[in-house]
Length: 69
Image 1 (cartoon, rainbow, N blue to C red):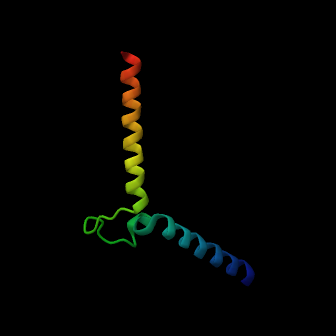
Image 2: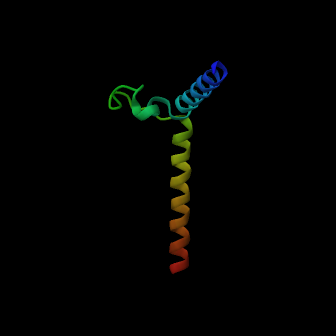
Image 3: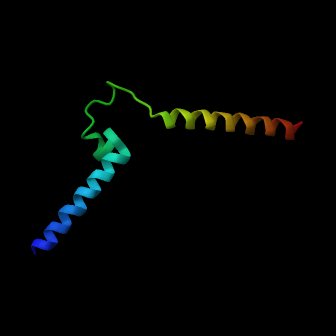
């Protein structure tokens, strides 16, 4: 029984760690983050991803205009 409890504890801690690592303050429904309106942060990868999406959208719009002409 002790082994089962130990394994469940390890699995639970790994799950909680992965949850916090992937979602940050938003993990567990924002329970750890406090008030989300206080600080708004973006990761460097998010800003780069937004620029890439904007460029892809602009390229797609140019292609559609070219095809429709």
